[in-house]
Length: 506
Image (cartoon, rainbow, N blue to C red):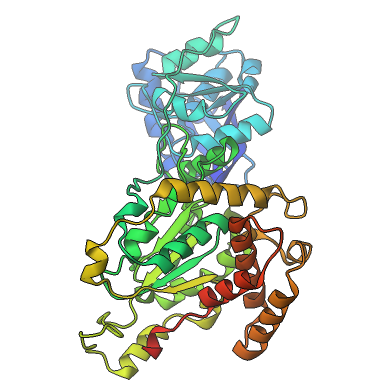
């Protein structure tokens, strides 16, 4: 007596279908689960036995029960296999027609009374089911809105194991219950308008350029100069996620166990504490889980007090900043986690933060200040397009008129992004993501602009990466101006953002 039900297992931020093969045979009573189950999967017997008994199912355990989770080489983690295991056993016992089980993805944790409990990672599981051609998903009621975000699937959000049993026995198949539409939630609560920021015209300009081209941004300055306030207003300048992007971002957060109840329509804004470890920042662990760079995918990663982060954690950012993905290699598997985020970093110029502030003496020795800044490596800084030094605010700045609001800046950013995504050679990418080949196919800069860039390359000792990044920022400035090609003013401004006065020179 053999029956096969279908469920799914997470692998990073994606999921793979798993065949639950349940076999009942005469012999010494026992319950064996094969296929690299973790402790939560092995403990499913302790949940399934009382759930079947308390729900009134006459399932006899005086047989040898063998369950194989295929593919056997894929590690199975968590309690989401309970429902598929219980239904597979009922199918093997003849209570459900085994051929019907191939039409459903079954995901859910069982309570001892048979109630269905929600699990994490359902959205990527539903995406895997749709790719495999399945049309029906059975899950807990609390997971139904999340599963319904995937178009093309009939979602049955049920309350208990008997409800799932009745559904699978019904002929014809009962229609799915109505699911209340989710209004969607943001991945973070980022509020505020640019009018709240006083002074700092150069930093405001850099924020607009960063939003328009997707560039990374580093803000230097003493405490209270507005670095964090500016960074937290960047998501308000970005366009909302498209339908496909919202599904992609929500799937990552679902796989991380953050439990969204609907699509995330706002761009993520992640701000980890500076004590976080390298695996927490870029991802990893056993089993591998997405880190902050993946949770910030298609959004903003804000690293405040950049020089306070562990050196090895910051160095781990170099590859994701360049490749827009994180490669996690383990003995059993190799995963690629998406990490197309926009980095905004903020740092004080020295340990006390007062270096260069007139009228307030810095208490740090030159050696201490140099050691503080040396925590940031050259290769990491080379991957940040915009460097802005923010001076301390004076009373005239605080009492002055408010700056431009976010709405008109957002309109200019949207227009510049539309120009970038309309270019056929850019493949719809933002300037910050343009590969070197596509960068060379853009309209050639003006003669004076090329001369200025060549002179800066020789005099400032720019690397090849820095040269291309200056060119990308200059193109963004041209897009903001609506110019057909890069002019000398665009290159000059891009170089200014690339090579500002360093805090050590103050």
